[in-house]
Image (cartoon, rainbow, N blue to C red):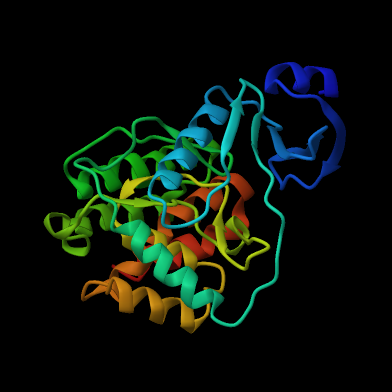
Length: 281
């Protein structure tokens, strides 16, 4: 990637490109124009078909709610995406409360169907978003079963995992009460590495795996790797109270991400996957 190439596509002269961090599955550059406008250019290492387009669609869906900041999408190419470059700021008092309230507002944006208009990716893994009117069926087939088939392909689905997973599926309709679930717009992969703080101390959502699903799935993901602080959850609940029984259901939504981590990173997540399933058995 060079300045002439970007200048031609963006319609303004790019005078500087600087390599910056791009995470574990891609690499990124900061591009600056003659008018001092800055762009964040991200290219994925695996270059999987549809990845950049699906990321753009998810970011646009989140941005259209106008309740929380999301990088603007300027250009989508097959092998890279050009986004607004957002300057990082500092966390100030009240930030997590503001973040919690904003996420509650995001989750109030609903759709007729669970899923999304395009499939996307959860980390390195393809994420199927085939639309459904039934949350239980969607979560079983498009989330848990999809990951389990990957376990089989990669050799992680031994006899113990198979037996526990089969028993869990038999109980799933007693864990997830589908008729009480609204298709809320969720980030889809909301952990501490997938938000940032802008220079006005506002939360910014990045690297989404957005779709319409049970909002509890978003909250469960925030708790998977240590969780956000109490101020975040208190403010979220004041804005949009969690339904009774969430604490019991939390692990079923964590399980999707744990299965994905087992598929991506290997046996280090085996025992956590197994113990999460056995919680319900």
